[in-house]
Length: 327
Image (cartoon, rainbow, N blue to C red):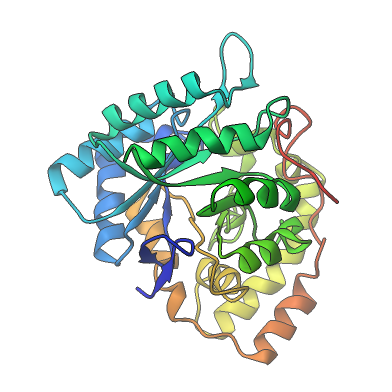
């Protein structure tokens, strides 16, 4: 696996990381043994950058990763997040007491005393981001975290935060069908030496060998509430993506490998974190860093999947609360 730097002051990590949200059952129920096999497969493929969060199954994902870390004792880079409060109602908390308490709880579940990268999962708009970064700077000075990150933010917020203390990474959704970061955020990250970490780079499974079927999804599956997976949007989206699948197969690539190679091709500072709960699905894209796109490939992908081709928003109105929209 090729390596990329996790921010100007960060460690070298695998060019492709692993998102661990699926271990908590967001995309269908799973079990710990399956998740542990997936983590083993990731390490065997050279993936050493793992991304989780305190709210993924209310700590379930972190506990699974913690169990694996304790048994395998691998050399990996861990990222986790905090700031989304779900009870008694959904809100965001970037206060120092809350972030400290959640970081300590995450480290306990992970079985570590240091986290390489600690994200603000969503920005609390009423609190100046400069104040939040001062808290994160304290955690860095105290040796609890190696660096901080921000998630689902705008270029303006990144500039304000970075001016207080250098930001290590920004994590926003980005894929062939979610392209907003191209409108300033990817460029700002490159300018400032910040890693851009695309989550859902495979469109929550739509860029795979088999289309996810909403009719067979578990009631708890996150995608059942996403407009892009609802009709008639989903049928329109599948009809468009069919051409890309044919293109990938004609070149001997998996669909997921081709989609992920496209993400990697958008800049050397991009470190995508596709998520899966199975070793089998991971094998479909783990070699994407070895795919080199030609100018002809890029032109054909742009023709097949033009910017803005997706029907339906990436979140519904309740899910998108907290996401900074800047265009």
